[in-house]
Each structure stands twice: as structure tokens, then as C-alpha cells.
Amino acid sequence: MKHWFVPCYLAFLVGTAVADRPLIIAHRGASGHVPEHTLAAAALAHQQGADFIEQDVVLTRDDVPIVSHDIHLDRVTDIAHRFPGRARGDGRYYAIDFTWEEIQTLHVTERTRADGAAVYPKRFPVGDSGMRIASLAQQLALIQSLNRSTGREVGIYPELKQPGFHHREGKDLAVVVLQVLSEFGYD
Image 1 (cartoon, rainbow, N blue to C red):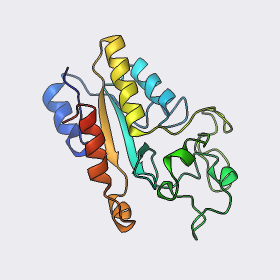
Image 2: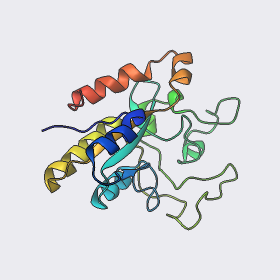
Image 3: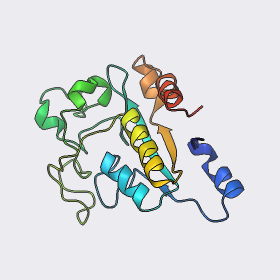
Image 4: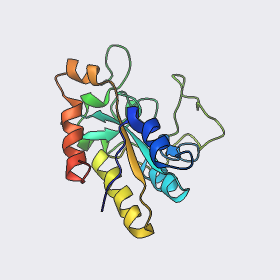
């Protein structure tokens, strides 16, 4: 089975060269309906007919690539409540400062502003959604399972978030992500 992997900078070229219609790329999954980048958002985007599902990727302290739009987690999780006092000097809670085990304890919420108000108040309610941050491997496994069960070939659209930041923190985001992609057959 061929797995579709489209680096962000090639999406337009592939879309015009392969498709006879515009490609539908689910930005952060079906983030207009459920909290962004969750497994629920990926599953809903797949069900709604997306051609590709986007994964923004950042690293944890123990080098697990997770699917998150930002390098910090305080606007989309309850991290400040669960880990008070672990913010950096700027008041933000960076994924790279937490282990995968710690991140798995977080509850994902609808995106909020600094004051805690919902950025998109008519979307999924702010509060405990019961959803968690997904690792890149979890999201890839879900998409491949949905592809098998539906017979559709939905591709992935990974975006490395702030690789320069990761380098300054002593991590190579690209190497870690390429390893995971390879493990799932995206060569």
C-alpha cells in the first residue's frame, strides 16, 4: 500500500499535478468542530472526506514528537492547572519542558486567549473535553487504520513547528520526525 506524504511546501504542486479538483487539507484536523489536532479531529476530518490531514509537530523533553500547533501548550490544555510553577519566565508552558508521560495527563481544550476566553466561542465548549494530545505515531496509526477500514487513501501533511527553537534547545526535530515517518512507511 502506498502512503501519501506531502511536505507542506510541495502540497500545491502535488495538488495541481495529481488532482482534477482542489485537494482538501484538514488544517489541524476538523478543528472547526472539535479541539484541534486531537485524534477526534483527525477521525472527523477523515470521515468528512479530507484528502490530507495536517499534523503540526513539536517535541517533548524525551523526544516524542507530538501533534500540536504551538511549541507551548497553555492555550490548548489544562497544563497550568496540572503543573503550576513549571512555566518559563515568559509565563508559557513549552512542550519541550515536559515528558510524554506528563503530557498524556493533560486535557485538551478549545483554543483560548491569554485571559482564558475561547478564541472561537461558538466552537467546541472550553472545558474538559476528555481528549488528549496525540503523539505523531498515534495520529499516523489512526489515519492508516481509517484508510484500511474505509478503503480511502487519506494522506498526511506534517509541518515541523519552529525547528530553530528545537535546535536551540539541543534537539533535532527533523531527524526524530523522519524516523517516525519511516516507521509508518512514509519514505
